[in-house]
Image (cartoon, rainbow, N blue to C red):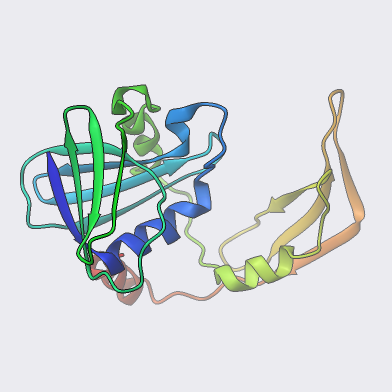
Length: 202
């Protein structure tokens, strides 16, 4: 089994999947990105048990391919990368000659990706809302410490998101009113937005 990618695409997979990837997870399979090619559609999926993310792209290879992809150092001078499983070993070879070889972790040990995808493919939604991720990250920066969490309260698609500081504990949890924040949603042109999303490849 083999798949070939542009290095720029591999970088994008790493960038997107890093949002829900724990390379130090206590369960070894969860330290990797689930990579699967079905009929020329390559899907990269990652989860740390609390969040999940996936990204898809078109590839030339039609043959079914699946592996657990580790995060490796990408050489600057490489333009292409080949990912191959042979005799139980995973080879990641870059066009500049740099190569990584390690034991291939069986994909069957990974979580049930299809089960999580049911949430991604959910059809019925009460409403849609768009938030600039940079604004959300800026709003949350410095808002809570390691012992705190946040509660996001949604009203309607035209109302701002209310963010409260949240202190979890074993017995109960407390919403702290001393830290509050508002984040405005972005008005969408749904026809234009849906068209852009359908044409977008990561």
